[in-house]
Length: 79
Image (cartoon, rainbow, N blue to C red; front, side, top):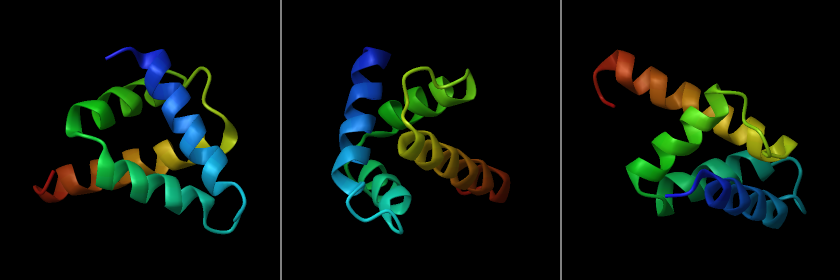
């Protein structure tokens, strides 16, 4: 999968949720966890860890949160 496509998709999701700033980041995280397959999640997290070029602010915050949750699950043996 093309990372530019995943970045565009993430930013589109963030734009949808931006109407509710208080819940936008969690909305993006929940959407990605619910609808993206694990490979897509790994790719966008790796892109974030490499600097996250092209991600808007909400997307960057959401992928950062997703990365922290995933790391926490891995350290607990659940991810």
